[in-house]
Amino acid sequence: MRQTIKVLTTHGPVSRRTIRILIPILFAVLFFILPAPKGLEVQAWKLFGIFAGTILMLMLQGLPEASAIFVGVTAAGLFVVPIKDVLVGYTDTTLWLIVVAIMMSLGFRKSGLTKRVGLILIKAFGKSSLGLGYVLGVTDLMLATSIPGAPARVGGLVYPLAQGIFEVVGSKPYQNPRRLGAYLTVLLYMMDMVAGSLFLTGMGPNILSVKLASQILGVEVTWGLWTLAAVPGFLVFILVPIIVYIMYPPELVSVKEVREMACVQLKTLGPVTKREIIVGLTFLLCLVLWATSSMTQIDTTLVAFLGVTIMLLTDVIQWQDIAESKETWGILIWFGGIIGLSSALVKQGFFGWLTNIMKDALPQDIGMFATFVIIALLAIIPHYFFPSLVGYVVTFAPVIFSFVAVTGAPVYPATFLVAFLMVISSTLTHYGNGLGPLLMSTGYVEKITWWKIGFTVTLLSTVVYLTIGLAYWKVIGFW
Image 1 (cartoon, rainbow, N blue to C red):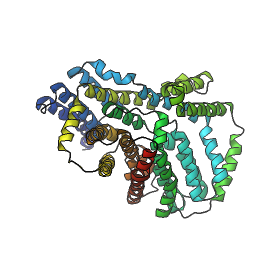
Image 2: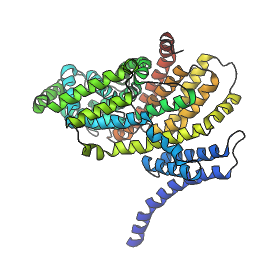
Image 3: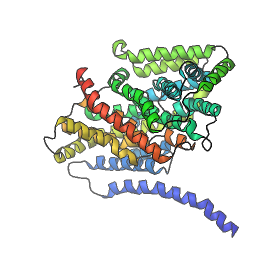
């Protein structure tokens, strides 16, 4: 009896995993059996089947993201197109911007600079619960300029700082959660999604959105141009702590003991170290070069390489740190593969065909503002069904950009509207981004509250971009 139970227990998870792998494969095979639609080449149809099957595998999570993409790249090269047409994604400079930016983040972690800056901000401005929210959010905002991953920024750097605050005030998941822990937990997620939308390097999928928009709409977006376009989003960032405070107020208002804790920990850290100074100066140098790249003509990816080079030469980080960073190499594999597959689809004429199909189905004379509203809704609503921001962008961004192409909407405002709202709509659920499950698992916040606050933040962002955003983009000459 015990042996039988053991066998069932052992093989149950394996069989479920096998099913989650087989379903995407069989789905892709259908495209090799069914005839291609009229006007679309057979090779493009088969390649899209592999692309769609790969995305389905990402959604079902039968394999880790990097493994799923590796399978997709292999299948595309084996059955449809020359492998070089897919591997071109790994030579893309936008991919390497993200990969090298993650390498830079290792220096932030090792040096301890982030913790020191956070404690200094708490000591200076952490007089109230609302003030603490702004302090931690601004810390995350600064990191978003160069660390393109929410779990790395908040999960690895900012939230541990917040947990130290919870300990000081005695706020635990099952003991006084509403004292402070619940408020700051849900707030940090909401602020991080907004912060991640404000910089090209704020989220990995931002780079993917830009690449897809370039392929389909012909737009060219630099780091500085992205941030310039995101100015209305800073208003949202400022308003989010107030909204969360009203909807889900903490029991503590004054947090003087937290400031005392920050003072004690700063003394424990001692004077600023050489590593912290080097990391701080490197960060400022990269920030300036990214912001002025349109004037200096220095490639933004080269700037990231320069930052890592400085950290390597000054021994802030070693190659061993980079070699052991699973996140870095995982991003390289799946991001390069996704870009390569989408590039191959462009080369095969798939998105041109999709654009023509949507053009024929589009109602006429719906008005420009109505078009922008539809674009915004397309960027938001499907996110309820996606547990991965990457999978969401990969799946829907090409469709929405194809829709933009046939509507005649100004391409730059439409591109930014889609890119910003796709990231911010991660707030709609607790699984819309990899950071969500991490924070939800702490047990501080109930799901219904999370979803209500996320809906409000997404609605606010949408209204701001459809009003102030469109007017602002008009003034600065985007359309």
